[in-house]
Image 1 (cartoon, rainbow, N blue to C red):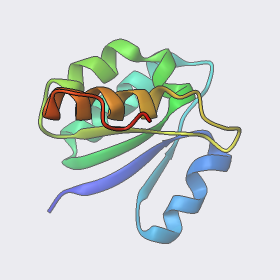
Image 2 (cartoon, rainbow, N blue to C red; image 1 turned 180 degrees about the horizontal axis):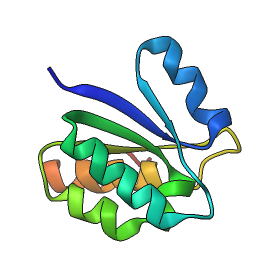
Image 3 (cartoon, one colour; image 1 turned 180 degrees about the vertical axis):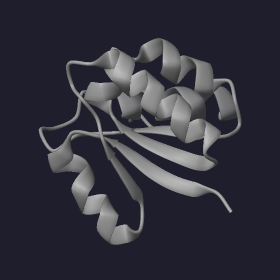
Length: 106
């Protein structure tokens, strides 16, 4: 069975613990630590890793590397300070790729 984890600032990720997710606070000014954390979680059989957009923005090449793999699924979420629109943009791109047109914008 795969695990589900959340990576991001402490204020954002702690609430996910109530839902049974493994919580891994990131270090905002240490992208190398965050890269190693994602790689470690991938090796430890995490099927899905939710990452705040702010942290994902600093480790883009790591996110892109896992984007090409089936597992773990990397899902970008807004932080407690708000959304940067990156996660929604990725969803929009994936839907457009799957159906051939952008059906999410009106």
